[in-house]
Image (cartoon, rainbow, N blue to C red; front, side, top):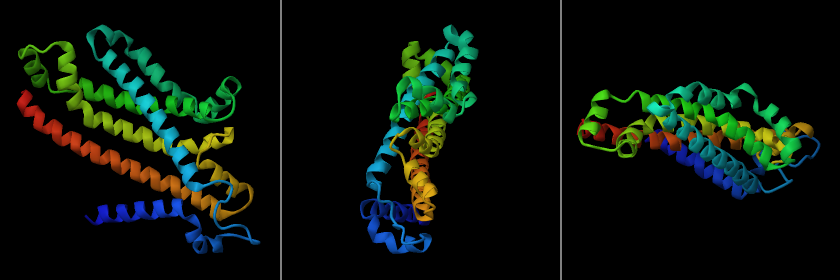
Length: 249
């Protein structure tokens, strides 16, 4: 309960800071020099934070759809031979760092959010794919046999047994991908995407540590809160899977 209380306080403070950042200006004045503004003033922090969250949400959703679909496909007998190819596709984002993907994507897609979306999408595939594959291929044989004994079709077995039982592991991969993307999205500002990286970059270029701290702090708090939210979903899914497992068996 203490941990939950602390997180709620942090969430309230974050929202308050994003809505009325000038109220916190006295806290950041000691971090400025030569009369520099203590609060980022080149855009509304709440708009930048929402844009940052939107980019992460879109890319995480896209990565989840593609990665889970690939994991389902290669975990079926008909798709097993495509496992090496699917792993290679999922590894593309890890092979090429996001900054390299941005450099390659900008000449094709131009500046803005699109190159960032591509980079984060590719970077988020691997943890979701690997977790989904583990979750779908390590189910207790007795549960699968019970589903077969009940006369379920392959599609019924997938939706009613396999995915619900694998969901906690899949959510763990999605959580990891989302948290990584939350931090990595900051580089999108180097190609004119609206992310919290612009607050950090503005602070670095003007030697204003207050801006750097604000951008980094918001990203860090958002990452923790997103991780906590997925943690709650994981526990719910684990509890539900535990309840279903004996019934299925």
